[in-house]
Length: 146
Length: 275
Image (cartoon, rainbow over all chains, first blue to last red; front, side, top):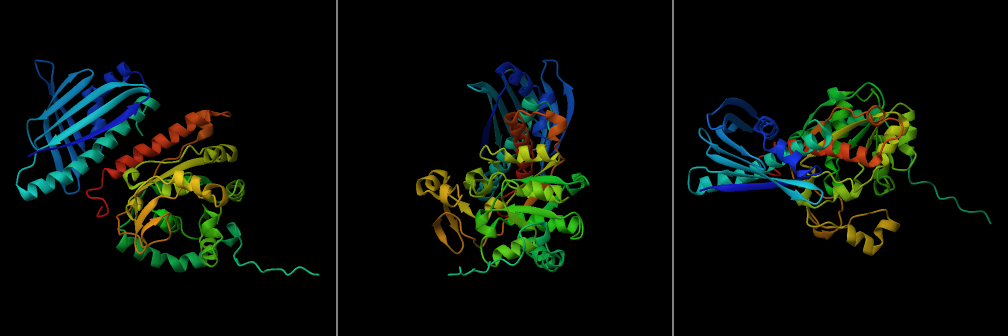
């Protein structure tokens, strides 16, 4: 089973400027994981990267090692260790600038309780995505995240 | 024929002089118990507050019961002590004009909101607490509970700039989970003329205890939502924008800064209401 949280934010900056930042894992991951922890592991031969990324949620740490593929205007990552999840970041045009959309899909084990946990996880993931998107927007519009 | 003078229903002066530190000291333990046990409240960041008069700017939540206001008063008066720099909150006339409740609010440091009141209080050396979003924000739909809704009001920026004081933003989550607000009630308030006659800008459909489904917000028994509050570093408008700020830019910056912090605080929520 899997559940997906999707959130968007409008950034009042040109699409190319937004895409460059939003699809740079070195900028984006610290923003998205600002409420947890993150660490750059290394760059692979094909140009992709591996990072350790965890969200601190109450008593647990959701995340693990992720394989990041960046190709502006999109960025994706897939877990290779830890909580099974994937992420899609996409930048599209908007009359006021650009829209950044993040979609996080989380897979948890179990049947009834697993489904309940996924439902709760979707809300948590959604709030983390909003927090990350707002940090990204503020960073782009005002120069520095608070 | 002599006019009959009707005695004022209010016995407590509306201003810094009406604030009663001993009264606050007596009430604090009850408030503390309520917020500690019922709302499991957490407040952080008072170390950011400079030792000079400042304008606290908060996001308003919880309909007519505004638990975030009481929590801030509690936390402030225990962190800085009741004898420290007084904190004065600007309150809607619905609160300050209500017999008995108005007097109690004034003793706690609330004054009736007005164009010059905040400036007068700042000039007296007190800190001032304002909620620019007012009733529109306190009655925003539940779906927007983690959004800053100042409704384009920029008066607080001009106040801070003209008075030469820093803005200290305060964000809180959980307050808007104490009542269920089903829609945005601004159009209803306008249609009923409430915005002109009562200065009430929002009349949404709310679901609360004990009223059930109700147009508008009456004081209710709040749901026991966990409330988290964060005091942010000060923003100096003079330093950032000079003598003649672009108010739209300043508004965007302050609300954006608060939105970032509010969203980060909201991300700590595991389940709405439970915290």
